[in-house]
Length: 340
Image 1 (tube, rainbow, N blue to C red):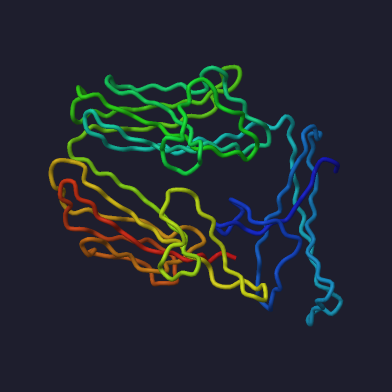
Image 2 (image 1 turned 120 degrees about the vertical axis):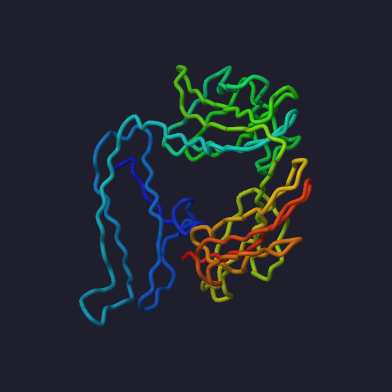
């Protein structure tokens, strides 16, 4: 019916429709036995009456003729149904809940993402869109907007005090929660930071929780990634925490070639005053990828390494025997895109 529209798109970097890829009007050339997944993006215009409508998806080839059923000119139809509810309720995601460690007088920064997954605009409450509470004395929390969208709290980022821009459908923003502990906070104290986002009418939309433990035996774990389009082990650009697009490379004739690679670098740093015993790294190949390079550790070689066979998916792990105070160790591996 009027108000309902559909476009087709390729699958995105994760090999599914989250996110979608580029808009397309056709499949690639499919040889015998081949398949291709496409995303059917259905949009409903504002004001479309509530109803359950039928959706028919047809695939058609004007040239293919089945050798099994000669009358089949290469077409097929599937039927879906869509229920339209008005007004559509906002769907907000505010993630993730996190946990970390700091020393007395220390600071830690937590990263959270807010996504409007709904079809309507989300309007944050004016004046104080967020409410922040710490359940232990001696802690304070400040929120920042990742204004330059680079995944790192830096001088370009602004404190969120009185306003937060409206979130249009599919909008995604990143915020940082900077938690500080005073010098008087005792070792072993565990603080819960509750961050609540409110909309108009003082309606609570979503919340996240960060748990911070005060300790003198501090471990700081970070993970960076870099794109390696030709999979030669050398990144095209620096390592970053920002999202990276990954896809298949394309041959000169337009056909899909080998998948691109991502290099991962997981670092652990002992920020405490005493050495710690053995430390275990554990990670996994993301969805839509397979292992390209087996994990290694520096500056000391890993022991007890586990990893899937190169070219397959699975978990990776390795152990370093100890980490001296102030020292860092690095766990590295690479994956290759294997999606369609």
